[in-house]
Image (tube, rainbow, N blue to C red; front, side, top):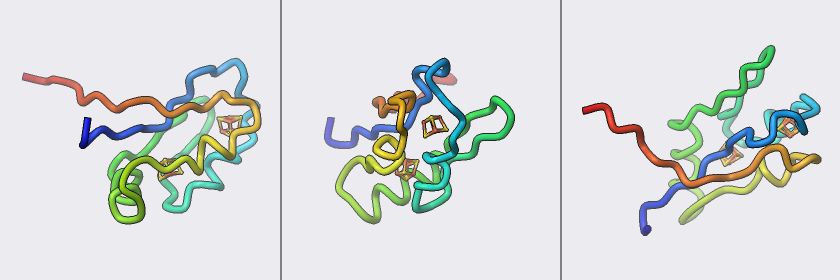
Amino acid sequence: MENEHLIPVLKNKAKCKKCMSCVNACPVGAISYEEDDFQVNLDLCFEHVDNTRDKECFVCMMACPTSALVLEEYIPTQTS
Ligand code: SF4
Ligand code: SF4
């Protein structure tokens, strides 16, 4: 659990107003949202988290006015 990372996930797409608050709030520009394609650059997000805080950064989640965006534990995909 020590190396646990939380990442932003567009959990409730129906609640998303496409206001771009999350995109604009992220201090490292890790979130992009074009058309219906919500993406998080995990390299940027993790780097920011690692460099500025011991664990997670809540900026994007706090910026979301509808709670459509939540932070969830990142579980790497096994590809072997
Ligand atoms: S957790 Fe922080 S660094 Fe990561 S996408 Fe959200 S605002 Fe950006
Ligand atoms: S801040 Fe919330 S409502 Fe606005 S675009 Fe991001 S996820 Fe959607």
